[in-house]
Length: 225
Ligand SMILES: Nc1ncnc2c1ncn2[C@@H]1O[C@H](COP(=O)(O)OP(=O)(O)O)[C@@H](O)[C@H]1O
Ligand SMILES: [Mg+2]
Image (tube, rainbow, N blue to C red):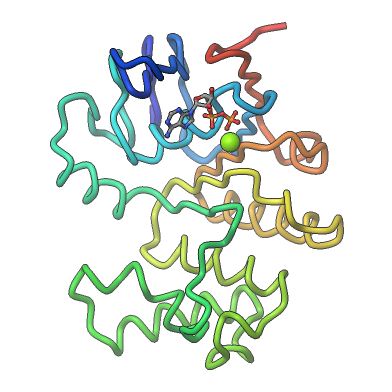
C-alpha cells in the first residue's frame, strides 16, 4: 500500500488553551496509481490530512506510512528528505516567486539537492514542454496569466519526479475552463503512473470521471454516508 494511515490523530497546540483536534482518528489506505478526492466542509481537516500525507509534519499519534516509510518518530530532517523525494505539492495560491523567471521557479526545489544547472534546465524544459509553457521560460512569474501560473506551479511540483502528487483546493481561483484543463493534467499524471490526491469541494473535481474514490471528511473523521 502506498499510503496507510491507522488511527491518525493531529492536535494543533496540544495542551494549550488554543488546542485544536484537527484529525480525530483517520484510518485510510490509498493504493498506488489512483486518483482520490478529499471532500468536506471548510475546517473539516482536509488540509491537515494532506499535510500528513505530504510529510509536512508527522501525526500527533497513530500510524502513518507513506511510500514505504513510517512517519511517526521520524526526525524532521528525514521527513524533509522523504517529502522531497516522494511528494509533489500543488498549492492553491501557487506560491511562485514573482520576480524569478518561470524556469527558475520550476527548478527551485532542485537547488538543495546539488543537481547541476544543466540537468535542472533539461528537466524543467521537458516539463515546460509537456505543460505548454515553454514560450514563457524567461518571463518573470508576475507577468504570466493565472492559467500559466497554475501550470508553472504544477511543473515545480513535478520537477523531482515524485510518485505522489497532492493538490489543496487547486481550482478555487480558476475559472471552469482552466479547472477542466487542470483536471486533464491530473489525469495525464495518473496515466503516467502517479498517485494524485486532491482536496476540493469543486464538483468539477469530485465528479470527474477519472476520480477513483471520494473520501468524505467531517469534523476530523472519515464520514461514510
Ligand atoms: N496551523 C494550525 N494551527 C492551529 N489550528 C489549525 C492549523 N491549521 C488548521 N487548524 C485547525 O484545524 C482544523 C482543520 O483545519 P484544516 O485541516 O485546514 O481543514 P480544511 O482544509 O478542511 O478547511 C480547523 O479547525 C482549523 O482551524
Ligand atoms: Mg484546507
